[in-house]
Length: 374
Ligand SMILES: *Cc1c(COP(=O)(O)O)cnc(C)c1O
Image (cartoon, rainbow, N blue to C red; front, side, top):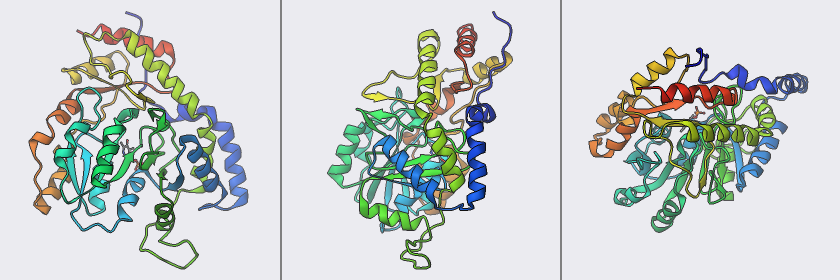
């Protein structure tokens, strides 16, 4: 075995190093201009990201969570209306539904793709169902054809959690263009700002107009308020930095895809469950998840060899106190049958290093250490 190399899981300073000069120059000019909220940078970024994914409209907002919440908050649905959501996801997806006053209805993932299983959705649709919230988890697009069919058949709103899927496509269409597309630009995401930031793609113009007011206290004309909205604005500073990084997003994605290919070729697939290959999709590998029955042991072993990994996510939503408390208070039931596969995934999944800070040599080392795991 080669000598120990230190492989970080992620390093935000290193990640942003290629952009440092451009960021500094931009920061100086923004300080001089002195316009910090809803100005030219936000408008330009909205246009550029809209062009990048090919959506109809795009709005900068304050975070990924806000982007998930706003399309729910503008609706006039009865309280306790139901929103279908995968039972394995980051907690934000579920919080968005609860914060908007609606009920999350959980659907199990496909055990190979870790994405909502379209064949299990219809049995969960009731007269109270108003929306389906899909999550393009780890950067892999969901199977959209059957999901769109269900939305059309039952007249449901589609919200896509694109926090991990910037630029990923299903049948050549980018995630976020099928319904409302909620993007996070949290610093570690494939397209990350220097703080909290988010964005929302919108298909229809009336929704766009309402959302545009909603993010700014329900106001499109200064001091004239049409709705009780939110303060969820993307800052000029973040928009400016995002514009710089957006120019490099294709390169970032290509780098991650090349590292994923090394893992796919190099990792012993009789020892580890590797991500399923693309099918109608081009994923962007926000995360490279593998599964192993003795995950915690594997994680400790890798750390002994200098390799840091992460778990996305260690606790299934149904096991979170926050979710259990709300369900108990509302008198809703959490059914174990809705979480069998979710729990299996959450207990065995491990995220390997796959960042722009990593070289091919780094990944070759990770592969060698991984394959020597007994
Ligand atoms: C990061 C993330 C979010 C939340 O985004 P924030 O910008 O942190 O609010 C939502 N869903 C998923 C799947 C995420 O990974």
